[in-house]
Length: 478
Image 1: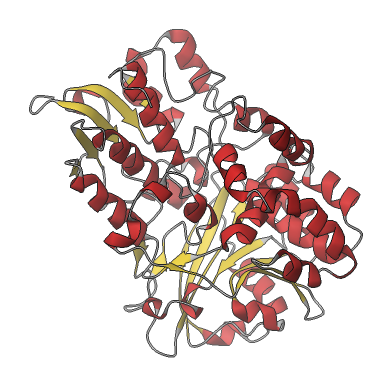
Image 2 (image 1 turned 120 degrees about the horizontal axis):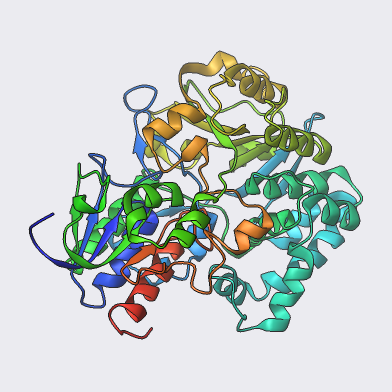
């Protein structure tokens, strides 16, 4: 493709692609970000999905790791309109009897909702809460020798265990076990798998370090701020620019892909050695999701009062029910009582819905590529803990895994995490390599969630990929 020559081209304008562009541009390099769609953002978009005036986050909605991201902390995102909104309760986990366990910023306050496991929970989390900055600096980077080896070894001895192994070994009661299992289920793995405990610990620790906020006006505000930041350093963004092959790229010294391995092989396979390309082709994708957005005539009528003070609610009253549902998904089965993840941002952000109205956001895990409509099962679960919910529904918007991939080809089979999170692949994604962002072709790099530290709106995959390109292509040390 002829035209202007850039130092670096980034393919994809999700949070990681924009972050990679910012890191390169603020070092004085010329950068162009290419986006196939007419709008930027990847999964971080906010649109009127159900009715005019009701603003729904298309994919990402709650951002616990965004606030603790070491890279985002170097950017004046607030200058360009990012206002973090903190709920009173980070996460509520209701039970059939109308009670709920609550994940609060206060470690002691959280323990007070866990009954007999109050002390055990606090003992598990306190060493890492007290060194939260060190913890997130370590966990949001590639796998390498840590700067605080004994501290991180202490975490690894717990986090590398399975969710069920740690929960049943550490906690005696249903509340702590269920709360922990719900956090671990963000791994989108059977909870008996090694390493699933780390997901629960990281998310719980993020709540204690900073809370689980949303963004006033929607997740798109993060994207808009990143775009403005990129432009402030001279970076460019081209919309409606699909990349199907290397010929679709402007001339540049480096190319960074905010894409998963399958797309990179399709686009640049001819530029990569056969052995490396074959290893990329073996990259595994995880289960998909089925997502629903609602416009509502009022707040969800939860039986548990704590749920009405939380931006995020997990539905699955026991660790056994959550574990059974997540294991079923991996067997290709759609559970009758799925684990449901709910966000109710409009309780805390009045810009999301007209006065007196609300929006609801939820998804469940389903088998890879599923086209099954899970609406009734999801709403049955909500009614179980919030009788009368259906009476408040004005309109709904649903999207299954097959539709999700058509909407965003990066979400293969509906996988929103950039690839399966099993222990081997999570520690060495996209393939085992000392520098996971680089490829054998010195010009080409991965900067997507298919690299460490994986999914989430934190920009760290893009940041680390940019640092790799800066070293290898431009001779700029970090």
